[in-house]
Length: 180
Image (cartoon, rainbow, N blue to C red; front, top):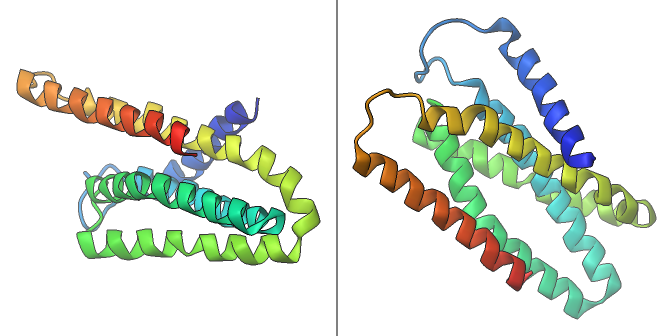
């Protein structure tokens, strides 16, 4: 249910972001709205990661260390993917790196919030994590997959390469289930 809520929230966010939509193609001057959606989703996700890390250290140091390692391992492929989305959306490489870095800093905000509101955070993150996942599912379903299917005459090698990268991403997520 909370995943669906996340999808709905991102649908509404995209409607407001595109409200002032112009019909200029994506370029350095006009960045596709999916970049902003991705930054919002990633910022919330990173903040929740910070909260989870802080909460896990409150339970015990070994659990905190294990949780921190799991978060780091799942963040590496995710941040690479987020960076790719920002660049593909028309953001210059340096700006995409900087914006991705700023989004990552929300993890520190999450740690501070968790330390200040330790007793309330455990229940709160239970709802926000699936909502954030719903946001990323919305981005993938509404923006990324249609981009992969946008061209009419795509070479078979391009389609196979897309399929390989999708399968690699799924494989990495499956491996993370065992690590986490």
